[in-house]
Length: 349
Image (cartoon, helix red, strand yellow):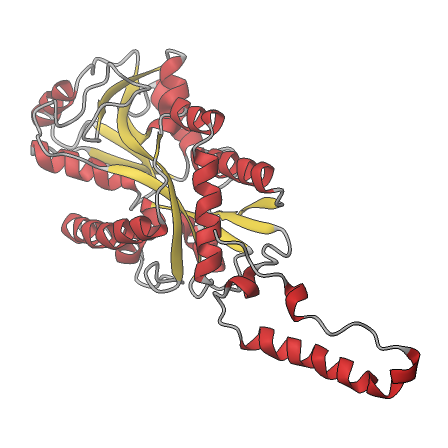
């Protein structure tokens, strides 16, 4: 960024000598003039933003602590704080599929001190899924920077007879609506990716929605459900410790953390590509200069080897890039997933 002009350039003149005391009101006029000049500056002016941030930055995470989304937020927030000597506080606001946290961020002051970590479900899917959403992702929020993406994986217990997606398809055709498929919540990327996978194969599985991944993991390992779909970061630990078997990925490419797991495209369904992405946004109206400053800070954090390695180790792919790139992706994804929701018939009253 160009060097910002110092406010000292607009300061009042030096104190007068004792013999010039009658001129003291002129000093007050100069100070008032400075205040008027600053107030008249555009919100995105470099001079108006040179004191940013003026207080701790709050990063809202619309999910509980300890999950994959929370890990991504804390990893990036910590590095942003270290590199810029900022105070960045992660604020978990779970509820309603991420709607509570996003709604809270959308209503916050657009001064760059409140950010939110959004992802595919609450930004691109929920607008078509919920009849009354407390925010419009395209009007009430401004994209700052993409962080990462991760494919959805279908997994089963290592004790299960299912070893490939072909096995699942064969069983489902033999006994329609008998093979059970769990996922964490209606309308999530995992839920809709599962719908797309079934449609591609012409099968029907019995859906078992859960309120979170913890109970689903227990039931999957114990054989109470046959299959479970979630993002790679959520299931990777259980796959690595030998309790779960990854059957197939929904992304166009294989995951670096699950190199032996084929994609649906490789399994006979070309063109299949469904994944979840994560990005940071700010309330609409946040000055462009602050959005750019935050974008640079986030990209610098993502470029650090320890941050990139941690995100990749959890099954994610580091993205980054400009705010404009994120905005373009968001517009495209809202349209794409809106059609998928409509075609699937999914809804939440």
